[in-house]
Length: 298
Image (cartoon, rainbow, N blue to C red; front, side, top):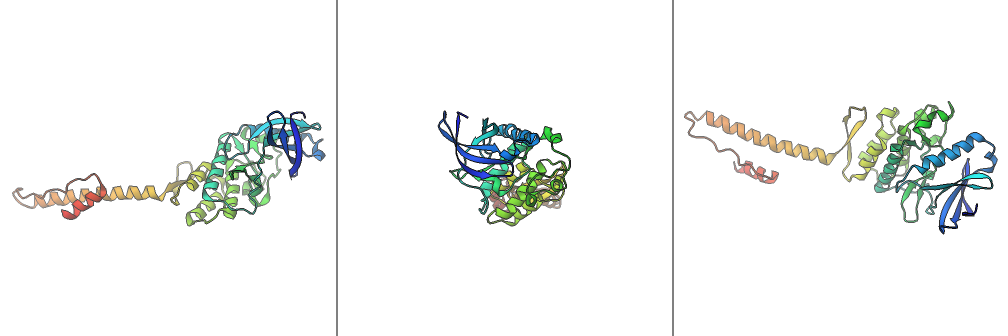
């Protein structure tokens, strides 16, 4: 393994050991994820491990851990990734902007046809500059590789599993949204009533009732609170901003006022008999404030 040097163990899971290492030629720190030695003879797990590398290598987003290479160490496959030294999100808190960024990264993965299937705080990693990234696609799957998962096998951490995933069913991006909703419920700081509504929708029992990751990212990125309106044609509730509704309501009120003034003027003129005493209509103004003043003066 001439290109890489193993320095120290920084993490261990049921499937692999992660080391901090060094790329000798590029002279940069990297993380090296090596298949656990006791699993070396399990061809299925070996194939799953390599599948993770292929899946993760498709993803290029500021909030997803980057995969650089596949190598070998002592005959075992090794996934080479960017090294993040800021720890995980376990025991930490999430700001709205951080949550929005993570949701955007998740949406990017879904757009690439990748479902993570194990979102939880320990898989949310912090870079030295504080940026949060989704990592450990160890049990992720590409949409076209669904058939490679054994029927009835439940993969993931139970606390964060969507109902359909816990039941052993084939899952899609909606399962990740459920898991992300649980993470938000636990870690999002200063939750507003609108945030709680959004979280409840993410954790809906039926997958079709959950928003997409892109919906969640858009809702969390906007300062105004998100409101839950009628369901869109695709069966998902439409996320709209209260500020949009307020602007539409204001425009509607001004238009209604102008129409009412015109009707009153017309009726008054028709009752004047000879039609010579006509009431002057309200002057039109470009701004709503001036239009209101014109109405009061009229």
